Image (cartoon, rainbow, N blue to C red; front, top):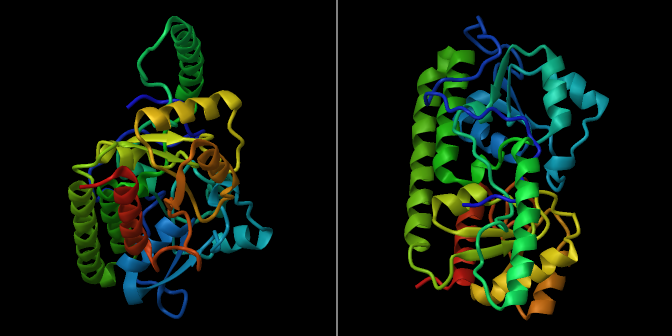
Length: 334
């Protein structure tokens, strides 16, 4: 897939063997001594919290730095939160998506830190506006040429920024991360290693089932293109043969340029797009404006950066299945 605006992050690009865990240093302790005998795990935001809770079970006490309803990209830690990081036995985070968190973790002194970006292959994705949309009359050729020069400049600028951190929206990659987190908990708390292994296996099974549901549910659709506020679904789109078109790049609150709005209207008409997606943690104003101007419907496609009362599901698995149904409806699944 072609790339337009990319996410400004310094994530690592290489894959590591599944189960190999990025620990800043291996703990020599064989048992947890904090949180009433439970392993004290701090997660940077919801996807990491979900993994820690599912895999850790009753043996861990999980806290998250990003409270429900807070947009994680813009999180600024309070001094108290930064200080409390040092009390964790294990920190599970995703480097590059929250700069303030990355800095605080580096300064925390915690020996066991797990960076999810080291547990799978990172890739570059964006708003998907750079691919060839075909040509019409001579005047349109000129516009296309100008657009191509603009996209090329954006691609060049974006290529230096780093990789797309939204790996949790691909169930296959999220399963790879789950295995690494499981291995981290085993190393930090070997007394309960068997339980962590069992829970990891169970979670990977759920994620495999989710992958199968997406693969089968999106195999035959009237269109492969979807429009969304937030350029968060590049991994999901690539996994299931779809085309993501984001309104304003990585920042869900950013205003699109008039040229981008015009381009999206053209794409919607050409690719028979029926729906503009917005999300629960960001304003829906831009999406609804575009939809109204283009005669399209709106719906929620949740990037799962946090769970709130407005979420269409109680946890990652439920919300992802809601996302699947929303995509099936919008894409005209048969």
